[in-house]
Structures are given as structure tokens and as C-alpha cells.
Image 1 (tube, helix red, strand yellow):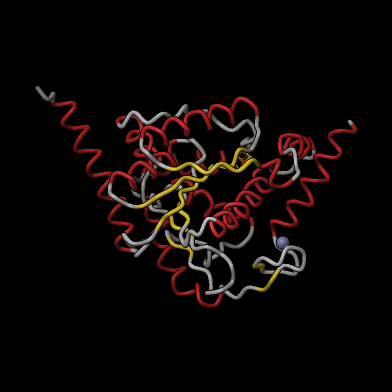
Image 2 (tube, rainbow, N blue to C red; image 1 turned 30 degrees about the vertical axis):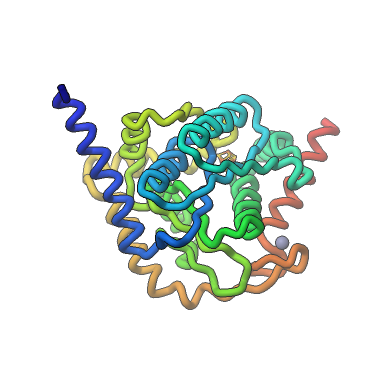
Length: 293
Ligand code: SF4
Ligand code: ZN
């Protein structure tokens, strides 16, 4: 016999999946004919995304970048490998160290010692590896597990610290043709983090919930707490911020998509040297300094 609790859970899961499919359809993120490379960290968001896409008949493969960050990385890869095996998803693993020649852990430890944000280095290099691998593997779409909370925090942080980039905001980032950047899609763009968590639990997905030991971004945490408080007091705040900026960004996108080529690596860049090459240079210096100390 199905209990009321189970029925409620089933309804929630169906509603959640439908909301993801609705975003895919409304924003034309991907067609059934396209193969999607899902960037999988082993965490709840990307695993949930891969699970829903596979369950609804999309042709997907997973891409994991093994960052070599101790137990956290080992757990993430173990969980992801199990998930992919259970769901017959081909898993592509890239070893960060082999790919870049950088021991990321050393670079990040030193990064923190110097009061710099580890995520700006790590995230930028990961994005560049992801793009190159997607191209090499012949994928024309990369899907990431960013949720509404992630997007809302990034947007507010950018408003306060620099200027929000309209070109890379929204559930679909579509770069200019021929610039070498693979379009990125975010089907969980309008999903609250708490709902993703609930869905992944109900679906019994193998995710540990472990947090990256270098994700100590105090500023982001402050913004997160602030947004959570606002959401509690005024439900719908996060959705309103993200939806309004999504419509606003649409109008600006064409003006902000002009790109040049990086003089070091030849990839698309908004300046002379791309962000990834700058981050790699910084990471190399930081990891070398680590050995001396
Ligand atoms: Fe890298 Fe930051 Fe993500 Fe950790 S939280 S994996 S340092 S981007
Ligand atoms: Zn470059």
C-alpha cells in the first residue's frame, strides 16, 4: 500500500522533474537529437541533473574533473562512478594534474594563505578544461548543475563587487558561432537548492554532501545567509531577482558577446590573455612557492 508520505514524495519529484523539463523547453536549451555532456562534480546538483536528463531520454555522458583534493575528491569520484554505473552513463574523467601540470591542492593552500579566493582560480581553470574536453569529445552542449541559489548569489556578488555579465547569465549561454566556446546550459537554473536536495534524497542518489575544503568564501557565505533571510521573510525573492535579471540580460546579450583570441592559448578571450591562462599562471606560481615553504 502506498502511504500518504510516499504519495506526497512522488508528487514532489514529478513536479520537480516537470519544472526542469519546462525550463529546457521554454528556453530551448537542448533538443532530443543533441548529445549533452554533463559536468559532474559528484555533488547533489550535477548528479540530480544527470539523473533527470537520463530518466527523460536525453542522450548524455558525464565529465568529471578529478581535482586531487584529498578525501573530498576521492569520495566525489567514488560516488559519481557508482551513480554512472547504476544508470548506464558513460563517465569521462580528466585528471587536473595531468591536464595542467599543476598540483591544485598546493596552489589553493597558498592561495588562501595570501588571502585570495581559491574558487576564482580553480573555477576558471575548470571551466576552460570543460570547454576543451567537450569540444574534443564532440559535444555541442555542456550542462551544469547550477541552481537558483547559486545564480542568485553570483548575481548579487557581481552587482556589489564588479558588474554582472549579461552575456554569461541565464539558463543558456550561447557564444558567437566559431569562437570555440561550447554553449552551456543550466536546466536547474530556476530550482531552489532546498528542492534539489530534497529530490536527490528522495531519489536516493549516491551523493555524500561533502563540501570542498577550499570553499571558504566568506563573502559568498554572507550573501547566501542574507538571501536566505530575505527568502524566509519574503518568499519568492530569489526567483524574482534571477527572473528579472534573466529578462534584462536578454536585451543586453548581443552587445556583450564580442570576443577576441587569447595570445597564449588561442582560445576565445575578452582581453589579450584569457582568464584561464591568467589563472593557470597564478596557480603555477602558487604551487611552486608551496614547495619552497
Ligand atoms: Fe574549486 Fe571552489 Fe569548487 Fe572547491 S568550491 S572545487 S575550490 S571552485
Ligand atoms: Zn589563454
